[in-house]
Image 1 (cartoon, rainbow, N blue to C red):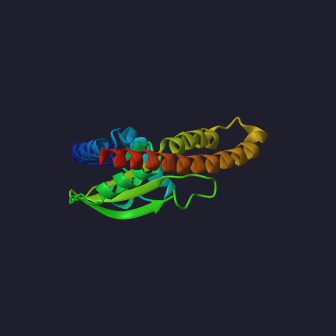
Image 2 (cartoon, one colour):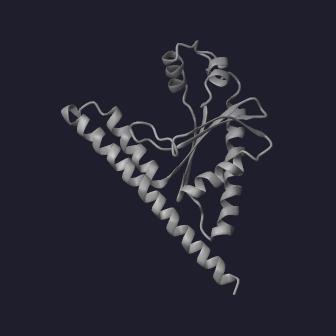
Image 3 (cartoon, rainbow, N blue to C red):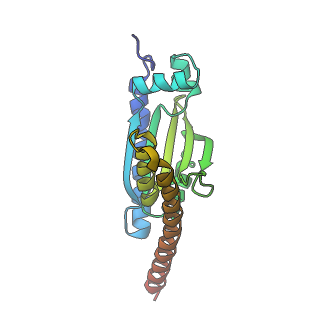
Length: 200
């Protein structure tokens, strides 16, 4: 069976590496500004053949290259986990300024969290090659929460405790969001003091 990506896999890899290079660039810029790397870690992947075919079936799409690369927009996926909320938006602003990338869709689940508490900034970019790239930006606490929520969502043996776990998870999401805001405030205060001190 021919791959669902046709002959585009090498190009997909090239585009993914190019975007990762842009992310390295903004990390260096913000590191110079704040004295610390704003990105805790960065993960990237090209969706597997099996996963992409399953997504096509789930969305009632034909399992074709057209569906995988033109209708579905997350064949190339990058997750950027930042230390602070401001870093999430600084990386976002940098990415939308890159000439070869055009922002197609933005879903801000940080400012407008999902009902279950999920928070993350989702960006879909169109690359000049014609390929799409999905980039998810979130803080460390948001990433930890999302990993735990994923485990609960897909574990079958939780049983009767699931409703309680979902409720507790939502409570944790709200507490983590509040902590992220407090940490951002402290970081801003420290940066302002250091800036003022350097002017003396």
